[in-house]
Length: 165
Ligand SMILES: [Zn+2]
Image (cartoon, rainbow, N blue to C red; front, top):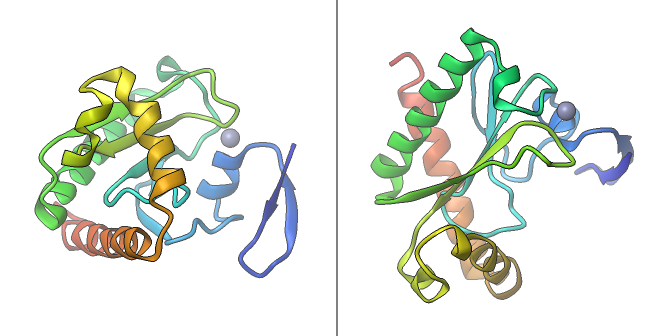
């Protein structure tokens, strides 16, 4: 169990943060970027990186092979739509995808856009954690947060535009 503080100041105990977010019990800061029948997308605002998206399943499953055939199709199609929106709305050229099964939450994939400032941290898997920590510790200023919020709004709008495509 973990304690979550809601936007109205109340605290609730939840078993799984991903369940709390995808069910709507906890509204993610910045809101829901997009959702399908089986998946839910939001930004983890602890990491003010413009265009970073977390895609979580609505069902409490842990491993990729626990997804049903329908969920698998929906997952890859939703990831591709978000990827397209990142390119169209934010001009993002490259994205790193990260998903670990030994999470304390449930099935969720990180879509981490690649920016020039990340170069010194390396170009592959080893750069992901240092990049996220740098963002969380060094970029929590008004400017980065404003950029991030602008990104959330543009992505949300872009995904709404193409909701039936
Ligand atoms: Zn869960």
